[in-house]
Image (cartoon, rainbow, N blue to C red; front, side, top):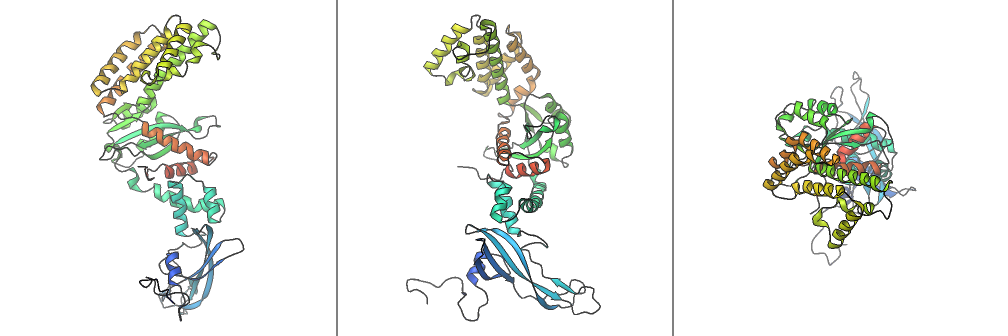
Length: 446
């Protein structure tokens, strides 16, 4: 009897307790597979949710001769579905078996097929999509997904791998790339040799609002210009023609690949790597002066060792107390002022990217012209490096500040995937996993 406090009838017209009904419409709505009906629901001794389902009665023609077939019983097919109500979900599909009545037909009996699962599959199509989406949107592992599905790791990965390959092979995956980033990543830290590193290619194209949503395009074994160049060659026709800008770190191999395969593309030296070169120079000068003055590596109470972290900060971020400590320690541990000069050069290098475009270009020109003649050898070496990369360095101001920042963000996602999986041994598996995780489909926080 319908409770008196309900103001309207339920939208589902049948219920299990209704007379003459074989299926429960509410259970079918929860199962949500067109053409399938739930006949029984129970929890087995393994605490799994077991759903017994069957399909609609539809006349079938023989796939061999087309003659109308007759029923020949049922065959129970066990499938694992996506988890439901916090339990592993198992589907017992009572699939219909049909028999051909044509004596001359070679097909004697055949079993009905349904989009719920392909033949001989253990997982439903919905379960495979659920697991693949989880690897794309959530920080999880195949082992965790296999446990939720109630199957073995290899069973889960075999199904996920097929779906993942289909997703990453879609042609629109490489469409609309105007800004291309490249960087290296160590995927096998314990390995010694050429195959411990991979080269990753990242789409750094901004949307119409100027927002960057970086996404991983591909990864190839090896950290070399040859690996990058080969990947560019193997892309579909028209891909390289759409690339207008290419960000890179100061590695000549990548620059040569861009020069050869993307001749009309503007190569831009990444701002982060430029500033990091300045940080390395300050550290090298500090360590050399430490050895020259005290004859040993930095100790806890050595003046220069006490400010090793402050020397890496921007001057605008230092408090008055930190500035006083910096001045005091430099006076005590830097008798010739070499560390002070190196630090001033580093601050000048940083200021390139912390001002307007016009002023930044002028500072960059001064740095390129002045650093090579500096009496401090480490600063002079930095100046020669920047002079060799002059065109790529100044291109930063012609491209509205293109950088490899998005590529470094993708690197963090890749590293998280590797850590969650406790490392990878197979590169094909590794490539699919990182392409799913860093595909750019995750919802951005607002």
